[in-house]
Length: 221
Image (cartoon, rainbow, N blue to C red):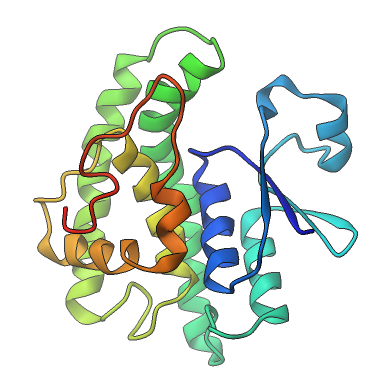
């Protein structure tokens, strides 16, 4: 059985979960309290991070590497384009969300509001929360600009770039930190991707002590 060690509000784990579901690869989800640095967990990934995908007798880490591996072994539906320039654009946007967006927004909002409490690290830093709330506006405007020119973020076909962005935004939406009224283009894009069967398990997530808002699982939000 393929097994994914994950944390529900990790955008990197959600990215892998979306890819597995889109490829219709059955997987057992095992929630991992990675911050406790359990010795068995560290044997699976000495970097001490999730996600970890246990597949075909090996442990695989790093969400981008995992997702591209899955796209190669299960090429339909394709999430990485065949054209080199199009692949570059997908990878550029994946890095944008996993690095820049994560550092400026996800880590400032989700980690401060949720992870700190779960990990018993104290109260949110209001300066970080304020900074994240300001920076998400810039990123939503950038997404709006992309979607003015394209049907999906990286082009006219849905790709891993869309799953990467949706993984981050879904974590933020879980704590009501996305202003969906800022861009109709972004709202329509998210409604499309949120309605995919691959998103069902994401919308069913529940983090103890942090119930999602009513609109979180609503496909007509």
